[in-house]
Length: 495
Image (cartoon, rainbow, N blue to C red; front, side, top):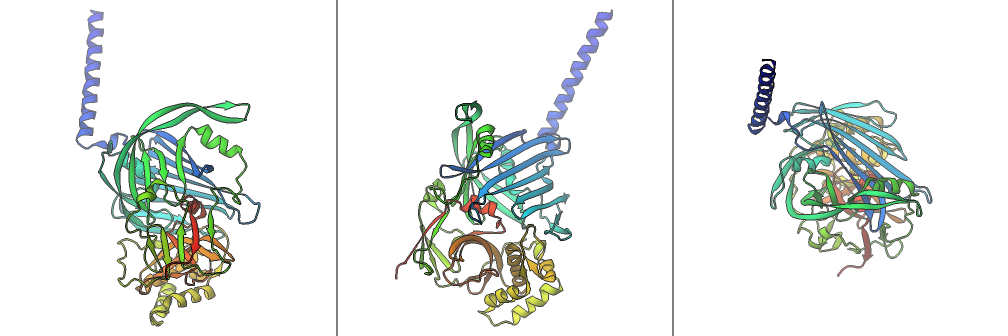
């Protein structure tokens, strides 16, 4: 009798377990995916390479925790020295928390550079409001609110969000709402599944005592899909596996990011001294030709990355305003555009919100004669906002009230004033002829029968700059990745 009772209990428990499993799977099939994970946990380690030289490390880690999905992006890059012989190693850590439906809940950013440490973060309330806390060095933090048109993700989660929709098929179109944690704006972006391939990736390493370095021990083949999109006005190719972890990322003017074993990517890189940028094929090189001469044509050379073989006909970052592109050649000081741009909806960041100070300057700008507004704005900000050093970013109204700002902050103030005056304006970055050399830097552009540069720190003269990107990605860490392999050869253009 005891055996019969025990067998009955076991069979009843087994049947109950099967029933529970059936109910759970039925809930998933009917759309109750809140109880399931859209992607599995995992990590990807990528070497950031310029030519044959590794100049950085990029790590993406996905963890499942009770609150949801935790995604950590860690990027370390060695940058060209400002002072000869002084190494610069910049690290950026971005930790974000997503729900089980892969919608953003919160984020924390920590940037460490030679200028100091810059921290910021934010939370999302439902799908309508994102609250961000940002501060500049020595200044109290400010709370800013961003209105959201729907669920958002951060730019680093693009491949994860694509993988959460299932195995990509050639031609599939993905559309996401991205929240820029720096500029605090929401943009709708599109990516296309363009190709499928198989990669051989090193997944383990052994330490070689002879050369005192880690060496590849084993490699595996991984099925991958290429996602094509446009970031900061430039095309980008992202190869991803089925779990959404990146395998290979190609920036058309910059670095190649390649997945490998942790020891090869991270341990070997950190054991080596920071590379010198004064020689070698990977050195950023912007050659002006005759000293002090204003070039009439910019010629790209030495760009061997695959995406550049077939550039799109129009690239927003490279075409328009004071420069025009034909294949691999940029022509400055060409006739201006005649059709005003249509600024995208939702382009106003809380960093650009106008108060009485911003509005007063906007009214002054409106009263300035048309055709001279860009230069007048540049001069006015140079006189009223002193240059400061250090990390952090503040809203335009705060910058104007305290009368100090970094290069990026002064360009932010220029955009805020111009937009309050009803003029299309944007932040951009590229290379500028400054102090006898071509340097990467940010500036603003205001529409005056064409995009006209407003560079408060350096001044804007015809033929002294090349625009390479659109947006707030003006941190040197981002620029080194996006424009690190750029070669510009300057010469006389066609008459």
